[in-house]
Image 1 (cartoon, rainbow over the protein chains, first blue to last red):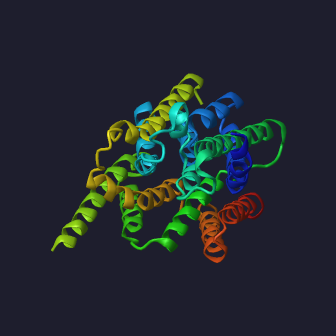
Image 2: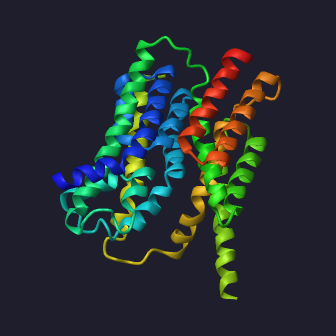
Image 3: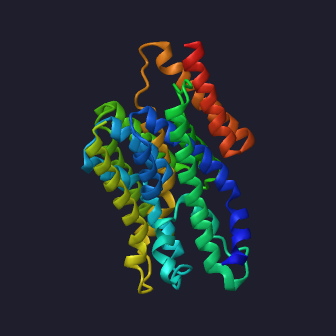
Length: 230
Length: 108
């Protein structure tokens, strides 16, 4: 465990920067929206999914039902299914730490632990993965605590800070757009969402949009797979 | 914000998120092969989800007055432009957000 400490800490430094800033923003925005410090810490400690926590602020203030919150979580976090699928082998013999490793598998942690080979000797791989997961978790909760504390203490004008969420999604979308081989899924996402928004209005568009996206993607990938066999 | 409803909702979101993270390990623990449709959806879902989330964030944009949409448009353009230019996630987010905050607080 001791030998894995330094490489794990160094590997998480880029994540630390991002998590402290985004966690800070989350804490700040949640308190602006009427939340409190315990709620902020519970969310970052136990939900531990950055984009979903920002969306949750909107659900909390918008008075969404528990069912729509569950459905929203399913759709927003569905990608975690695919992280799990690709970590099955690596975490197969992870022992007592396995439940925590799975719980803490965020986008950023996944990007570090999925590397093959890992940048450490074989015998400390398990300790390395555990420490990377724990450090990332720590940075996220720490950033949240600092942001929530700043929200209670400072009288800074935070109007517009919630745009950080929009900016996060725009940034990820642009990055995916620039690196994607196939841009049709992104276009399906925009098209189906805008269509449902225009037809159904801001309050009711989300769940129909999700279902329409899932349906169109199934049809699209199915058609593509069929083509491959022709 | 109703306190009890808020805590219940946080519990629901935490459970569903953890469920999604654990599900593959529960289903495929015996070394069974991943179904083809899951693999195919896994490849295309992230891009569509991110696009949907952007639309979700922008759903409140009003076109009735300039202050309803101009700061949003400029904020998104600066964020995307910075990212195409530098490819630095943190710079794009902070730059776009600061720009938007200045617009809504100082200009409009």
